[in-house]
Length: 316
Image 1 (tube, helix red, strand yellow):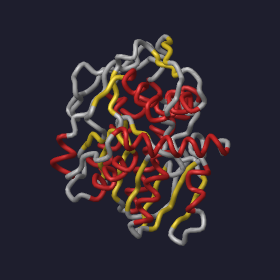
Image 2 (cartoon, rainbow, N blue to C red; image 1 turned 90 degrees about the vertical axis):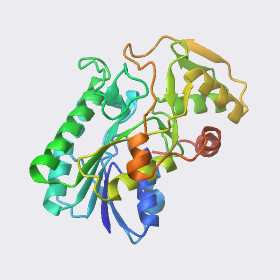
Image 3 (cartoon, helix red, strand yellow; image 1 turned 60 degrees about the vertical axis):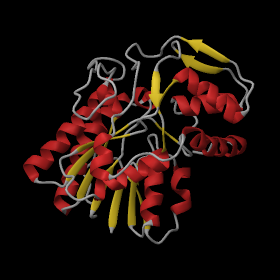
Image 4 (cartoon, one colour; image 1 turned 180 degrees about the vertical axis):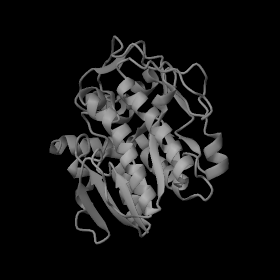
């Protein structure tokens, strides 16, 4: 099968390219390197079933494939605040371009949305039926509202044009290739711990997150795309095991054997969600999917990658 991965040089996108290649598919990887990294797909460069296209998807696309995975967007607060207008454009214009490409090719389509569409949730855990609690003018809105628009566009292309499209809402994901400088909690804590720097916890550390290892997430993306009868559906993909940020900082210290102290700083965003945990009942029942990698095991794999990359210097 010929597949297209938009944002394929990103953290999750590059792992998805690997999985598709391993299954025997052809992969066209599209990225403009706004936040994606060449190093993430360098090992695939000479593979006979891999093709790379450097392109900004806010410009019309004319690629043909049988399945289109749309993962193109900055995904970390540092990335989308630095590139706020680009984030709005890729999740609106870029999503419509991707949907139109899928329509013309008669391809399946998957939008990688985010748990951020739930905002600071007033329902816990968050099911797909929850509409969210988002500040449309806040510092996170370029990403949150961009993804919400992308979801609306995806559903209209499915309803009006009959595109075989589905939406996945990705919760916190970690693993190798997560850019050490992208500002999210996992790379921040690991790099600080490995360098012997203070581990910075924003707020009181009692806010919660649920961390899924990247291989589990990729399996969920494949299941959502290729399970028959999922057009027009929305799936949470994440780990329902919830922990506080302070607990996670202590686990990072344990795995890295670091002597770093844990320090507290004011919240970077006033609308930072206090709790985040997916209800994955729908993914379990419809896709037969749930995460399998325990947090400490996945963290050890991740730390090993960071030790290597930080020791060699961070590539572009």
